[in-house]
Length: 516
Ligand SMILES: Cc1cc2nc3c(=O)[nH]c(=O)nc-3n(C[C@H](O)[C@H](O)[C@H](O)COP(=O)(O)OP(=O)(O)OC[C@H]3O[C@@H](n4cnc5c(N)ncnc54)[C@H](O)[C@@H]3O)c2cc1C
Image 1: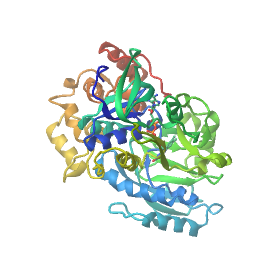
Image 2: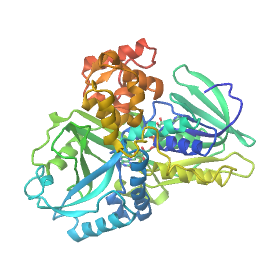
Image 3: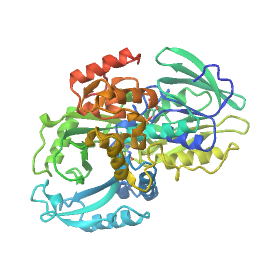
Image 4: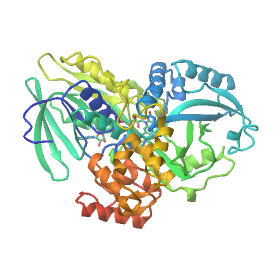
């Protein structure tokens, strides 16, 4: 961003998680002049630490959140259309536990789940005899009946990048490692103070409207905006996941009812792994410091081992990650069970005629980011003379344009054009970058031409691509958010990657910070 930028932006977005990225993408698609800042790396907050489910949320039916569930169910197929490489169908198997919810309750819930929103591609739910179906093999023989139903899985951090690339395609200025320091109104504009985190240089810009999409930091950001307040109380809830080597063949996941009447999901993860989560624990410290506790690990192992035929041990854990859900309540719900606080989003708008508006985003789910963004823009379009119709429901995100051959056809095409590239590497490129994979490979004609090899299938060419086109800067950006190669690279490979980033002048390339 140019510190002497003297033309005001239409919209200034604070926060480069999924919600800020989606709002910038929607606004820029309406032809607005947009800027977005993120104080860390994109998706470094909650948006790389989710369970990665694109789902209605079966358990939210128990808290009667029908509107939210319906909206989220609809979004599954919208997102599969917009970014089929980043959102894909998932079949979940829910073993019946006699001491928990009765079978008729689950059937009723699944009936609602199947019918609350139209499904064109995802199959309906069904009963499963675990003793005769292959999905029963990973479970203890004491489980006989289950239900199978549909949802989707996605890549949360890459959805953030795809939305930012979409925003950038429409002219948005996208700035990582820039902290929002404060804003005040000057007539019908906001004067916004920023700090470049890498150089510690401050500067200011102007905008006609401000969006606070700072997730768990939303209240801190409100406090920095002169004249804006909120009565909402933030309740931060930690959720953790553990990752172990792959536990079963097949692409299905398990949705488990735990002994304490909660739920837990166990998924195939990154080809060779299984992920287990999540927990709901209060968190009162700085969100960036969140990490898994021993108690959470014990809890997850105990619960999951009630179901799995082959028990998972603590020493099987290869990685873990934790995130903070920013949940909100009004006054009296302080004593509510954390798992029952709504996951829905809401807005507060600070606006008076003739004064620049500010919109604050509270809560939300990964699944509903596009809809949240559309609602946010519809709200602002009532206050400012902006185009009222957005197009994010039909606009494919960068990399998602596979055409009639779909992902399989595109992979075949790449295999024909680059016969020297291992199939597994092609699949990984397509899963992460979609049709942008060919920009990454470029004119290379051999593995050697991809440059230095850091281990697994990470080559210099991909690192350069991530630096040049996806704002990557540190080791963690590359191995935990743009890719999950942290699961496969050796310590030496990670060190060499750090040295390489130092050589090419990426600040902060010195040491990984996320638990690994
Ligand atoms: C354990 C867990 C599991 C979840 N599972 C699911 C799931 O399976 N499906 C689902 O739909 N949802 C899920 N969610 C919810 C989902 O992850 C969140 O709703 C979503 O990621 C929130 O995105 P956000 O953009 O609001 O916040 P964030 O991703 O946290 O983004 C906010 C950004 O604002 C930046 N920021 C803050 N202050 C400033 C400042 N002063 N200047 C500049 N930048 C600033 C932060 O650095 C941060 O990157 C889960 C959440 C958790 C914690």
